Image (cartoon, rainbow, N blue to C red; front, side):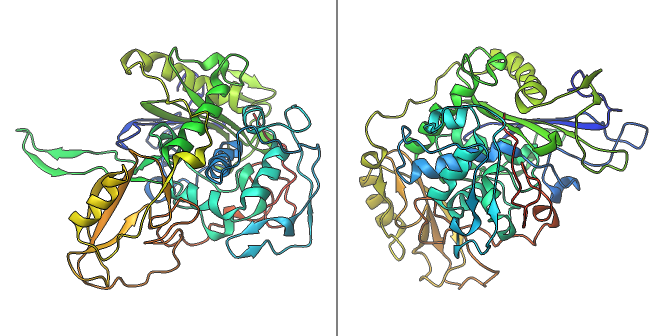
Length: 462
């Protein structure tokens, strides 16, 4: 990290590493050491606001992966083509939110910063990070499912204020740890695990005082995640934006560059490690500003991007770490239609654990006991499953069963995705949204110039 961004630079560099399938945090690094001397800070820029007091930085096009996953989950073929005009022309009321059409009479005219064919398919549109292609794709998926999916994958501080048409271009401030946790879900074939920085606490004699168990939920069907991996591996393959960062074993990822180059990202992963690298410009007051023409790591950045500025941080780390990682490959998606591979999760609420387990295992699912929860269902019976009733998964995917303690749960607010049901296969319990973050609205977004409610004329990309 220190060789890419110096501690005294008017920029922040950050890197977070997470192990798929466990959520174990393998590493956190930032360019500014902890302390009160020059070039030091008491803010941890690599973790969510609630842990490190830093508000995070806009993620740019790395958010496109959530729309891609939702599209595949909705059976949109990888070969499907959508127009990619430059600039685009999109009436905002044509976009669907969780509560119907987006309420605005404005016209959004996002731009592309990368070139492509006039109508890319999901492979080309993603690998070349084409903004207006993804805006058209989001019109097809709606905004609600990608927003819910991002929350379920670890971007938990998203609020309802972020359900806006420019969501796909990066609308909310996030941390490297959140992005690494989210992309680790793709690497884990759709199994999301909460970030776990500590696994246990022991005394000097080695006696374990407390253990922190992993907390994992299947939020995407494995064939859907495998298809996402197949698309994103093209970014690190020869000819991809991040081809120079290839670590010597199968890898996938996505670049992100925000409007004005205020922050640039690369989030990448192998089948057994996910990492998010970020470089963001700040002024002496710590407020975001462009990286352009700044001295960063001993060189002046006349232009910056996710692939050329953040990507090398990720690449340098993974090229060293790769020697300790098992040399395994991603599971290739089936050539058959994904719909034919998926099985609907049946209703199991009110059944005994053994009965529900037998039903689910009979369909080929892996079943995990999630422990007791507050529920009005009779004590000792299954309260709900995650993913919930109606979700579509593949054989071998994990369904977690939660057992009722017979105590009705107190209402905390709105639910996203439902406790016993699902939304287009991404069900399971989702906590109530956090209080609105003022940074999610106003002028611009991950790729915007501020056309109403944060829907900017996006021109970020790779």
